[in-house]
Image (tube, rainbow, N blue to C red; front, side, top):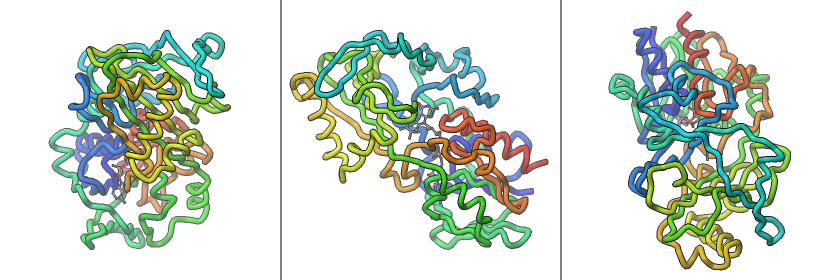
Length: 357
Ligand SMILES: Cc1cc2nc3c(=O)[nH]c(=O)nc-3n(C[C@H](O)[C@H](O)[C@H](O)COP(=O)(O)OP(=O)(O)OC[C@H]3O[C@@H](n4cnc5c(N)ncnc54)[C@H](O)[C@@H]3O)c2cc1C
């Protein structure tokens, strides 16, 4: 049996790792020139590696893929972690900066963070030479023909790859935009479930300053509006790391992100962030500015968004079609453990078990 995996993010790499263990032949087709997808790091910005995508270890999402089990417990000796417990918390709302630890009143579960590594490093444990050797990069799939026993995936250069089964792990935002044509088209109920999901924009930025003038965490716009999935937050990214530098992180996702993602270029976007910080901290941001990096996931050609908002039925999304087309990934965890890295990884376990049984 041979399996084609579309996408080399967390779900695709986990699937490759599992198939390798089961000695099942597979091939991964990845649109971009690297693996990891929404798990990505930069090593040379600060004196610690920085996660440009997934950063927190969300223990409250109870997916438990064996490969990340020890990390999720905070007990993996190769990936030390610490509980993310900010102590100075401020809110910027209606032109006023208030120091307020509202976590006391609305307790949020404590996430873990990596001390000196990243989610990308953790994923690399699965991205073994054997898995990467079977990955074709720069190979965006544009067509999947599953009308016959052999499934055929064709890339934008016209190259065809065939197998007994295909595992689609591309972001749901790409399925919504129908960047892959299915022959025959996916069943109507599957297509409408895919369209029900919401995947808003999202981005991160990291800014180095010469001194630290900001709290551990600064929420812009006050308390989260009704959902933990709608955030706009600055945070001390160097806190808990072995670092002598002053690195402020910025993360926004959901409707709150739109006022940032609506800018046409990273320069305009960053100018907006710096203006906002200058307003909040009386011009200190421009005075202390050293360097910055922006990662706008909305503009990534093969991602085009942040993550799902749990509007669709994940079990339905994950359902296979015709016994030949399988799905896994962030939004496709059939147990609804969506959003997170470990949820994406766990969904690959379910899909691989179904494919090889
Ligand atoms: C800003 C941000 C912050 C986040 N923070 C956290 C966090 O703190 N903790 C956490 O657990 N999770 C977080 N997440 C979510 C987490 O990153 C994702 O759930 C997870 O990485 C998704 O993995 P995946 O394999 O499903 O998809 P992806 O990682 O998106 O992988 C899909 C792959 O498919 C490829 N692809 C797309 N189209 C095609 C095509 N046509 N042909 C071939 N390949 C294709 C893409 O290039 C990509 O490599 C965050 C996400 C974002 C954007």
